[in-house]
Length: 272
Ligand code: PMM
Image (tube, rainbow, N blue to C red; front, side, top):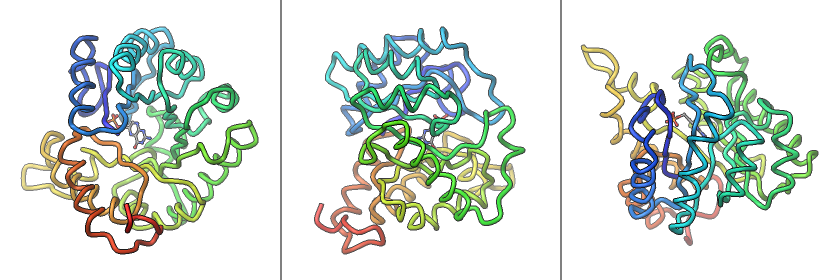
């Protein structure tokens, strides 16, 4: 899943693709480079970010979704709002990627239930302006597994088909670096919920902290090799997808992992 943020303030690519032409060109490039989906988002979720209005989000996302879909690119929409999800699907999106797992907008799960799309439910505890205060866990793997199980149950109760739900631990969302590493190590616990897993580690702060030097954390633009190592390991472990800023190197890492994998904790990668 290639990331396309049509925002002025996302932590890694904010401001680069606000212009429709630039955004479409980047989405086409991600697809040409091997992304199975291009994930179009119009609202930054970086820690501390303020919310965009629904009008702003729609205006950013819809032209890009429409143009990419018309060009044959499978598109997902990264939104917490039912209204944006519905409009993006009408414009051609095939998956709704909801970082709030249905918690931010009570209309989201019923709206998704009425659409013929896959749904990513990410682990989330609150909006970006306060999520740092919500990074409080007993055992983070147990707590995130329990809370994602609740989101899966809520989606099913709202009428979403269970086999259309993909779960995501939500690295960096109300989580410290220690939490993120624990969750990456604890993915088999999430996999035990019986749904495919998506993981978004690309360029996130915990990688910058891991690779910190005397000058401080490794800058955002210099974290891709570490991200690639995570992709290879997760692909070998059998995750369904990774959400990343580049596509070709990820594709290559996934090919290597698939070729080498002989059995994995989640079952199933060996014969791909
Ligand atoms: N991370 C971000 C945005 N959307 N969606 C999913 N499913 N999982 C994630 O980890 C995730 C996401 C924040 O990163 P960005 O600003 O680079 O898009």
